[in-house]
Length: 132
Image (cartoon, rainbow, N blue to C red; front, side, top):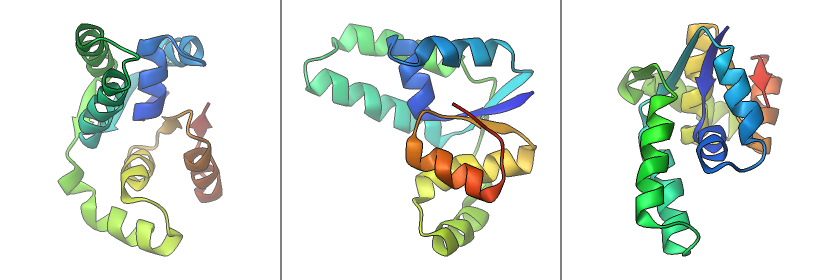
């Protein structure tokens, strides 16, 4: 199964937070893992928040970043998704960031792996398979 990995699931996996173990197990069963290149900035931002809140050292965050980036086999440039994402985000009144993952999954015929509740609801409403 092809999987689109979102930043929330990747962060849970590399930081050992719930349900990180399940995320890693699902990724092990994937034939290929893809993500929009936005993933890099979102994971970096998430780790930065832990550093600034003194919940994670900068060194541990850097290790987590390396580990998260290795979870993805291929990155799709957001520029190739942008027009479709703009339409979907406008129609569905949902964030552009989340729609990058959704549009990529639809294009790739992939399931989305996320732990984000709001994104899971959107994905289900669109009819795309979601792993949680």
